[in-house]
Image 1 (spheres, helix red, strand yellow):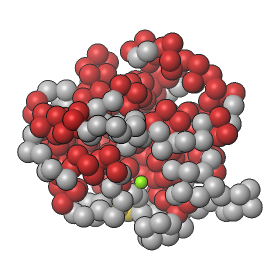
Image 2 (cartoon, helix red, strand yellow; image 1 turned 90 degrees about the vertical axis):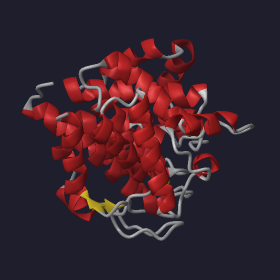
Image 3 (cartoon, rainbow, N blue to C red; image 1 turned 180 degrees about the vertical axis):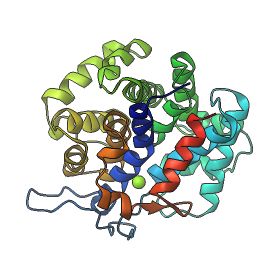
Image 4 (tube, helix red, strand yellow; image 1 turned 120 degrees about the vertical axis):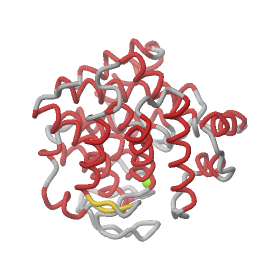
Length: 303
Ligand SMILES: [Mg+2]
């Protein structure tokens, strides 16, 4: 697909925005920063991150992106196998911060996507965590010319670890929004995407996010409240840095809510909207810096 310079900037913003939100929130995870706390890429936090270092959210998004760069279609067997293999490689690097649900699946080191899906499906009693929504952003990059299969891919990539209708629908909705934002530079895709999910469930949740506050969606380790926190931060601010800061200020799973917001913010405002200083600080698994995220993006969109 032939992209304009503006669309390329916005495509580059998807992974960079994810990483920027993740690294900004990393130092505040599981806290509720008060109004006097300065929000910056300070690192630290539960896992003692380096300043500008991203966490599992971006590392797993990179795994999805690498699968897309290698195999193209993620809704097909080869693509899903490629992502599964990248997840196992990341697991084998012994990351400090594997989400509980994700760890329950990846510990089996499944050799195929199908087998990983079955492991996820067979997990009993777990709630719909935010661990697949946090890494869904790059799915959109692989399907800029194919909305139908984008939805299918968002659901199956979620199901590798989060085989849950709420998680899969959240990934579909957000991936639709990101794809639309890259192509058109608006957030209209958030509401348009309701056509691909249970709109009766999701539409009121979006209303609450736009008109309410973090007290209305406090359990943001849950995929539903995580999506609401991200959408609240986006719709209650005017630019990318302010929205990421607000997502962090909501507290709780700050790196993840800001990473989720960052994927859509980057798709809407482009790589050029990410402050240069942040861009210079970004780093993380697998030894990448900001320019590596841009190069990986180009491998996907030029396929
Ligand atoms: Mg994280």
